[in-house]
Length: 137
Ligand code: ATP
Ligand code: MG
Image (cartoon, rainbow, N blue to C red; front, side, top):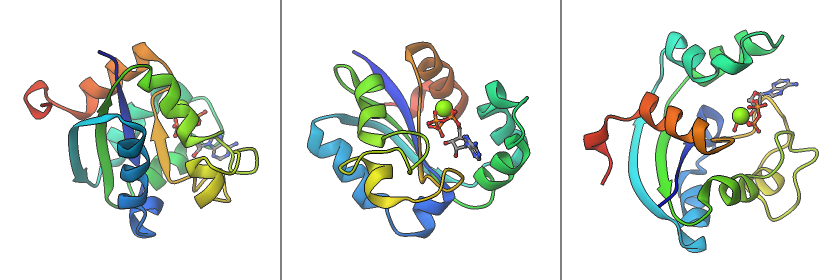
């Protein structure tokens, strides 16, 4: 069965959106198989966003991800990688549709409250980066 890595970024935690975001995945029918809250180091954030290291916003993005508690999760279910991205909405909240998490709850690309793996391979890598195998049920 397919799994994906989802993280509620520091802005989502700070704004009190943890339960709102978890509810949307839960109500859709996906299964939560791992969850923890932690403040990543900047070095860890840089590993997580390694594919974006050439982008001008990389440094600010990694500073932001490591600025406070993040809720790291693994969700399981049919098509969860692709459909999870659909629940999340487009990267920039300017483009994300109403009904999506970013569309309903965010206005800024730099503060878009949630991360979701962008494909099955990325999902495997991100789950391995953030979790030990024994942390998954
Ligand atoms: P995420 O990986 O966080 O789920 P995404 O896959 O929709 O988001 P990516 O292209 O992987 O988008 O970018 C990672 C994150 O970098 C975005 O979620 C956003 O917070 C930030 N970001 C992307 N583009 C910009 C930009 N032009 N300016 C500032 N921040 C950006
Ligand atoms: Mg991405």
